[in-house]
Structures are given as structure tokens and as C-alpha cells.
Image (cartoon, rainbow, N blue to C red):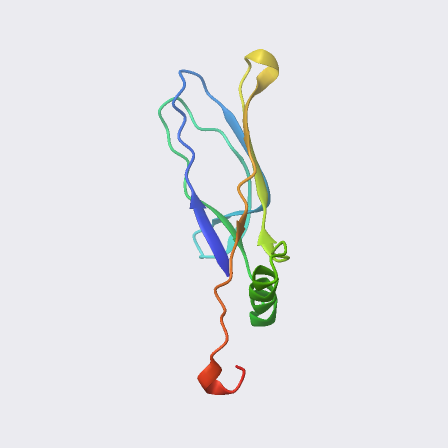
Length: 114
């Protein structure tokens, strides 16, 4: 799994609406992830933790290492978009596309190619 925690804090003096799409989830009380959807923090409030996360197979993560060694784009990524709006300036006050990728799987030469 590749994962990054996001916390949104409303520093304005107005209520804002944050929309999360893509691989962005929150955890329910039963510890199961579900789509983050829409959060409406009041002024001064912080959102609950939102996780940018996705599960990958070991083979997929090893493909990331192979791509990195070849100087290519890493094929397996976690992607999402956070858009925060209020009623000023047509409502769009911010948009972020936080990517997450990496190569957490490395070969073990002493283990015959594993």
C-alpha cells in the first residue's frame, strides 16, 4: 500500500466545501475505508484525516523500481484531487492534485532474485 495522510484546515472566516475525488478515503468506525466525498469545515475547523491511498501487488511495486532504474515514469501511482470552494470569485479557491508513488520493493540479491 502507498499512503499519505491529508488534513484540511479552514483558515478563512467563511465555511468552505472540500470535494475529494480519486484515491482519497476516510475510515469509518468499523475501520473500513470509504470515499472521502465532500467535507464542509467551518472557519477554524480541521477535517478528519483523509488518506490518499491505494493497494498494489508486490509485482506492481517492483515494476516501479524497474521503471525508476530505466529513468522512466513510474507506472503505479496513487492519485486524487482536492477542490475547496466558497461563494467568492466563482467559488473556486483552491485545487490540489497530490500524487504518491514510490519504490518500496527492492530485490534481495542474496535470495536468488527475490
